[in-house]
Image (cartoon, rainbow, N blue to C red):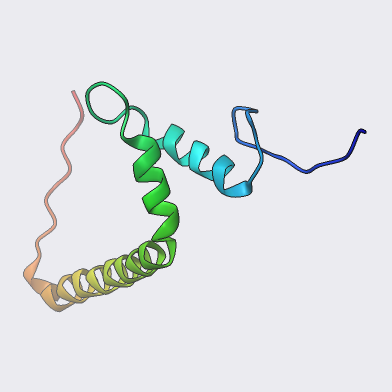
Length: 93
């Protein structure tokens, strides 16, 4: 007897029974071939998905540090004030 079902497709259009498998396929594609012989990308993709919360936290902390770094650079530039001389512009050749 016929029955209905649900499936998921990765970005290449490959069919998967679970959303997790489709996402792992997409992650592995983004990573490309890793290692000699059979690619390690599918295993790494699984690990990335399993550790997603930790990875997202790491990137959030990274973004915060980038903001702090930019603020420190801006403060150093503004502190330099009159200590920075503007060079005369030269014509392009």
